[in-house]
Length: 210
Image 1 (cartoon, helix red, strand yellow):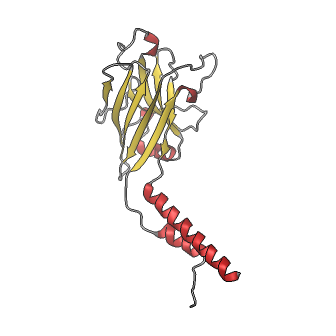
Image 2 (image 1 turned 90 degrees about the vertical axis):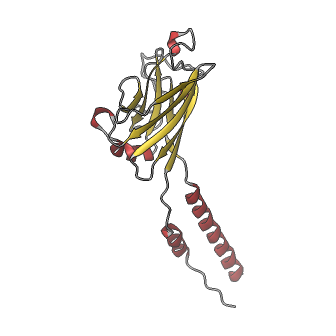
Image 3 (image 1 turned 135 degrees about the vertical axis):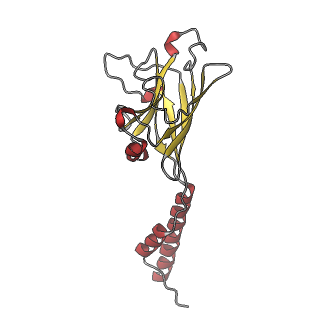
């Protein structure tokens, strides 16, 4: 029986042309002190604090909501006796890759406070221990210095933004995390299906040529 196979380029075209359902975009950041970039004479960051943040960009790309949980930073000023670990500000910065600094594009705790239209911040300190959870939304019209979410989305989606928590001891930032897009399961499935199809085609061609 004669079997006909599509060229590789045709298969790739078909896979890429499959309709993708509209879905929110998921992003994630892991916060550590080692990601902070300091310029002398600032002290190098030596901290046991850490955290993580999960973001959701809605279908219309008009809201970037997130939940961040941090450990080892006093979010109330009363969780520890050490004033150095007190949280003074928290922001999203852009546009900068890992190893570089950028300006504040949206502040949600302390100054500047750009979470105002509306104010969505909810801070839940840990009942015991040092740290807490932050929930908020970067809405479309909000931004620091006249910018907006829409203006910063290219940098955010390209992995050129980071979330930063600043303390008394480290005013430049004690823990920082680069914000990265989480691969969409549907995209991974399509890519895997396309790769598997191409592999099967190559095996069949090799058997035919043998």
